[in-house]
Image 1 (cartoon, rainbow, N blue to C red):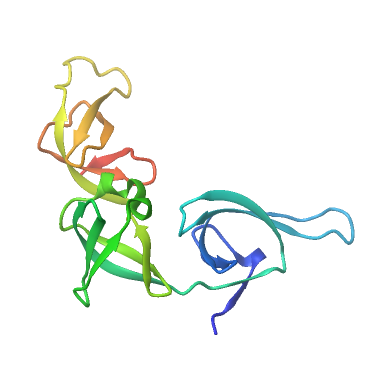
Image 2: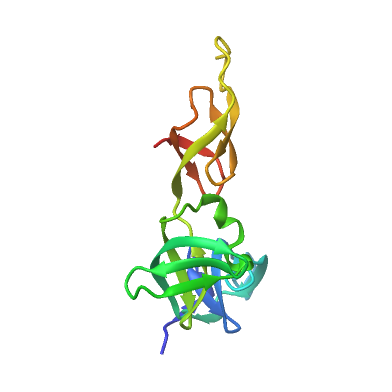
Length: 190
């Protein structure tokens, strides 16, 4: 039997199961009443891991959730075709396929052979967990104008996956850069 979590113990970046669906907590806010007899409420901003939908919901502090039967599997990205995106389990060497909806915008950060964590719920693949940062090669960028160094000046850089980011002037074509997957911002040279 999976352990039960009380709503008040759910914190940011935790996983829980609500109405037989796995969720990821993006934000948690506890509001305690000032009057006697009032109930403590917990407002959760949560992402449905099956549909990728994000919404807010308020729960009573004592409400309980099951821990989801979630498994993180280390996989390598193989390719994407009309059927979906294909990944190879690094332990069983089984090929797992995710639909376009399950992958979402993660393809902007995936290159062939990249090692990535794949979520399985009740044994079925449901989505990906991207690392905080990824390394990608710059495919195209304008040359930086000399002398244009007042403040924090950036230019557009197109990366090998087609993702476009704002990068500092000193970044050149062929360089590898780190990019934050959550904000899609430049994180430094690789």
